[in-house]
Length: 251
Image 1 (spheres, helix red, strand yellow):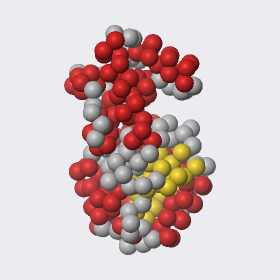
Image 2 (cartoon, helix red, strand yellow):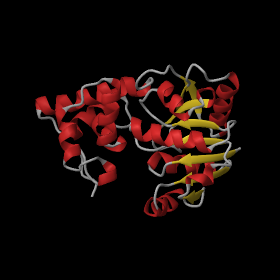
Image 3 (cartoon, one colour):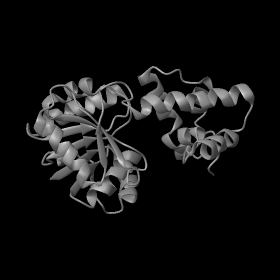
Image 4 (spheres, helix red, strand yellow):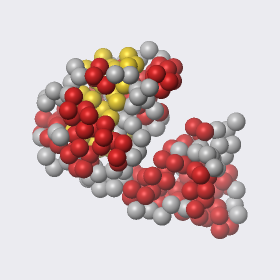
């Protein structure tokens, strides 16, 4: 197998580090600046390029750009036109319609939703979602790919947020509303859920880890009410760990 990854963010780079230990991997970045950051992140596990044509010989290509329907659809359309008919294509979306994105790729029979979790190397689950047109060979190929990576693949329905995010984000947003209505500190709420419910990470720290902008986008995709506090933090550039501040300060 020859793997291509279209994207250069946290998920794309984490996937490149994971997959690069098992197979020939190329990661595409939109600009030289993004490529330079990606090279630092993948640490030699993948070849980083800036020409989309460099993915044309890949047997599997995974789209891993921003959680924005239009951005993903545009890139998948470009990939659909570039790649040979037999190439398998996947998206790492965490909340968008797999059926709609598969149509953008012009190959719904060879398409999958491959929702990996951050940090990619540590999280064992992959949510696999398929459009109705996906063939048995396509389904088997992606299950085998997850097994190669040491992941547990669970096939989930093509519904907004699949399983994990459909349940997780309403819970996390309720923690934000509780904080706002009671004046509890983020540390207090997170400590309660870690020590009382056995969660490895509290809901507010989790939102910071995911990114508050990404969390808001997921909330909108699954029809969950995004708390005003999250919107306010995003507007001021406090996006969570990746920006150095969110509900917590990371400087």
